[in-house]
Length: 262
Image (cartoon, rainbow, N blue to C red; front, top):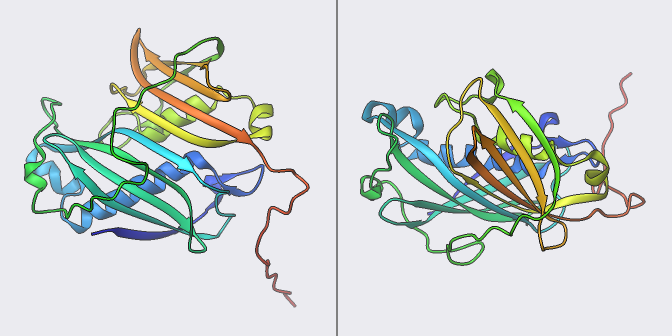
């Protein structure tokens, strides 16, 4: 069974170049919809605390098909459980507005024992979710990262309270923001994100120093961002970019109604 929820593009999630949803912010809508799906089936994070279990995402894969919705427009996230293996929970999803999809992808989740941090078997979820064997990006296969070549930028970031989630480790959006900070404003003015893949390898916590290096790859306009803590790989992010549409084109594709206050 598929699950859908509607959202509106708010200021904090808006690309100030085009007043549209930032592609990276789409990840947060996906996570929220997954949380709502889990809540509807009584396996949300707060439901699992009593059993010493926590949700952890292992990887996200998303492709953008067209421009994202404009500020204040309503978008719909549709998500479903597409595969349950012995230890992995796969979700596939589609984001749409005006009844047309603008992004699609998949994610891999785990249930961990909160004390041992070891994965637990998914059979405890067998009566919670209905599996819909439909794949947004084809069958789930191991994603192969491109080979890093020339380092083009590097930054350091000290984790602060705004980076921390309810599991007391750094939230996923913070890693994406760190990687995005290595991309110049001039580049983002000229190119927009076409696809993104992120693999989480280890946790990081409040006060940790993270170093993010961005590398070119053999594929044109595809970059590899590696986030390192104390010499250990925390996560890998691969981004691909395409040329933005001409600035002469109208960015508002619907009529704005302005009320005349008297």
